[in-house]
Image (cartoon, rainbow, N blue to C red; front, side):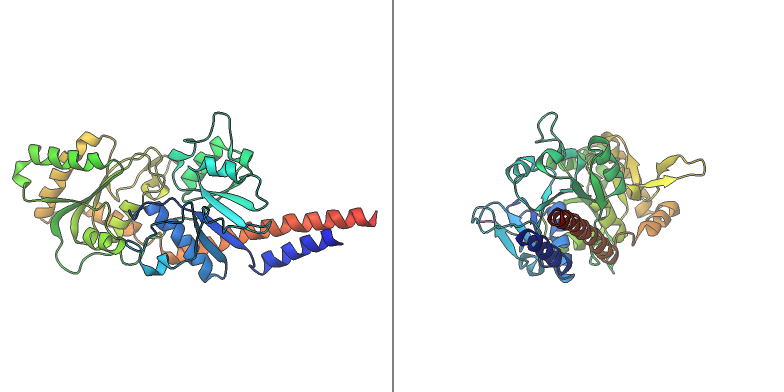
Length: 361
């Protein structure tokens, strides 16, 4: 009877949201990171939906996100592995980013449900040993940010149960009410690329030496949005991006984007023509050659100063606005985590029925 009660209690706790969800994050030492911001958004939304969601980090001296995400997010419940305050049960969930295969190995014996949070396919194999799979550590569920990324992960890990929760773009990403400035906002994965693009542009097009390049790396989130909204152009270089938050933020700010086409093209950049062929949308100026960017910038600046930015670019940007709202993300979070909970309940119910049948025999 004690065995039956264990399963009955587990089912009751899950159905009443009386369990913990622990999201592991890397300590970025106060440096803004889109992936970390997205994890915090999941935790905040889940708490608003009545779940006991928490941020989990390694060290007790975690720097937090107050300086760039603000009090609303830094005040969410945090706990560290170092403090040994983490005590998980069979009804809890631990959600770990794909790059931390070493941590997956450390917790493989935990009785909780284990979920991979994969925002960058590029890091999925970085720490995994050759021949190892996430399932070897008890991870069979994965949450990712786009259908294209989910499909790519399934090619490598066909056993995975994959769920998609797109990133949301906060409402404070919006255009300025004033005339935009001759400033080019730039975000690159490799910091040196931003400087190379600016230097090459000034050398090739000295006429535009008064145009300012502004690297947005390291700015608090709302300051980042404000600068992007004032800019006349944005540049994005991230060939291994899994989603592409920055171009979408630029589109919401009505700031045209010049970008290097990533290896994994996100669905918001894709268009399907009549014969079923997939092409790139005109919602940005896309190139597959980093060296082309200074010339593309010069061409754009010319039409911008002449007030003749191509209509097809502006129209395609307008069509792409509003695709990734907070409301849509909340709806996706509610469904995905609700489904994960239901699946866990069904597992315990099967175990309960199995135990009952053993007793009856």
